[in-house]
Image (cartoon, rainbow, N blue to C red):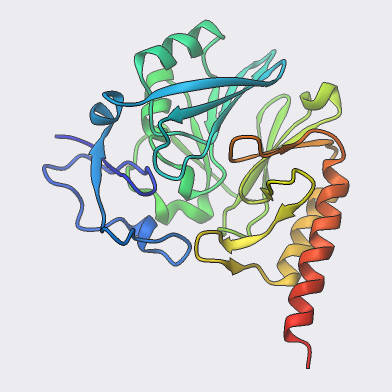
Length: 272
C-alpha cells in the first residue's frame, strides 16, 4: 500500500489503501488547508515530475531543494564533517540521483529535524541510509509515520556528531530545534535554524512567529528567551529554511537586533 504525501505541507503518512481523511499538520493553526482542499500524492508520483537541485553555501555545507517547488518549499542542508554527514531538515523528494550524490559525498551519519513542518519523508531518508532520525520528544504527537529509525530526544541539548549539537528553542513548536555546527563559517560556528528563527529576505534580520502563513507572532517573553539562549552559544553564520535565507557574518548581532525590534513593536501594540 502507498505512503501518501500531503501536497500542501509535504508530510508523509503511514501506508494506507486510501488517502488520509485529513492532514493534521495542515489543520493545526500554524499551517492551513488550501482553499482548493487537501490534495495527495506519493513519493513515486513526485519522482515523475520533480528533481532536486544542489547549491554549495560553504565548503562543507550543501543546500538541496526540489524543482518545481513542492509543499512548503523548504530546503534540506547537508553538513559534511570528519565524523560523518548530517542531513538537516528534510525535503519530500528522495530519488535515485539524490541517493547517488549523497553516497558519493560519504553518505549520512544521521538526519535531524527542526520541527514537524519539515518532517516530510524523514523515514524514507533514515531507512535509505540506515541512520537515526533525530527529533525532539515534545513534538512526538505530530509524527504521521512511526518507524524504528526515529530517535526522540529530551531536554535542551543533544549531541549528534562531534561537531554538531541540537538545541531546543521552542517558539514555533514546543520541540522547535536549531543545530549548532561548530565547524561552520570557517570554524567560527554556524546555526542551522529552519524557521524556528526565520532569516528574512533582507538577510539582515530574523523573524519569530508561531505561524508564518497565518501571521501569528510569538510573544516578547518567548522571543527574548530564545535570543538569550542563542547568545550563549558560539556562532557567526545562520542558515535558514529557504533559498537565499542566510546571514553569513554578524548573525548573532542580527538576532539580537531583530529580537529587540520584534519585542519593541509587540509591546507598543499592547501598551495602554
